[in-house]
Length: 486
Image (cartoon, rainbow, N blue to C red; front, side, top):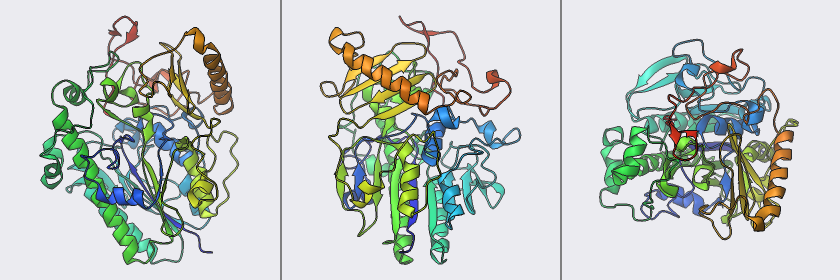
């Protein structure tokens, strides 16, 4: 049997709630159809609620405390002002393993895992955002080893290069893997950032399905666009956010059409997911994990959409089983028929059997657990409970059956002492087995402002950008600082 192809589409900052199936106002007919005719995982969780560490986990199957990417990587890492830095050296990534087993691999869009000016190992086709994000027009892109300012809407540019890669690789004899990493729907959302035809889709709605909640006391207010969205004009921000997703939707339509034209649709797995979650007012804040201080691991920040579709192979259905994004790496390799290299620090097990229908939905199995981390914040989440532990600052315990919105912190409640003790023990032992002392994120001073150096940098003080001031969250004695833009 011939090896299947893969087109892996990843958005930037899209919460699981931002799907047409769940949000009536969202105009995303292609993604809606892709989900309706494929397998949609309803409880798919990123490994970290910010882009670079989450993306590193997707490609390596490791947690941040094992791969060493702990925060979003600042633009200096792409060689803007110095020699570019590489963060996944020595780790077996999905494209590297596939390429070593005969696959042709292409990348179009956001990389954000180090120097984007040269193709990462495993890729022979490469069109990359130099920095990882920014304006939708005039984006700094790298193509054929040359940097240029892209005049087109960057979502459309990423799509057109990906379509060209698919069409070229589909004519060859090797199976192919093309990852299409959009910067959308990340900020900025201002009207001048998005084409009128996308914004016009949302002229007549004020987004009634999106909550307008009182501002959470942990919300970081230093990011002007997020502060304005929370305080002043959520509708304009939501128009930009949703317009960006609709731009991705039409891009996905073009990618599917290219597969159809090439006669490769039925032998290609098409995956759609996001790097991390996002809140547009949910839980009283705008942003993701670094949208609050202390950084948060609430579900809007860590739960992301996931769809996998292949006609005739993937049976259409919803699957409610808890699933970690760290499991994507071994899953793709198993679906490709490629051996997964042994990794004692691997954090996720393949769910390929659920994709092909070889096993039933495990959504009600109590034993399934997902873990998450962001610097000095770690989480264990079962179907019924969530425990968040911090190196500094308050811990949290939630009963997700009685309190799915994570509002009532039960930490210290005598009636939940046994649950808390059990979860603490499991969390500690699991991370002991899935981290290394030299890459441990829990001991690092991550505050959500970005990472400047790999973990092997000589001076730890140069790795992470510190908070700009001594302000504190009222009544908590914790720094109240800006979330940054990534």
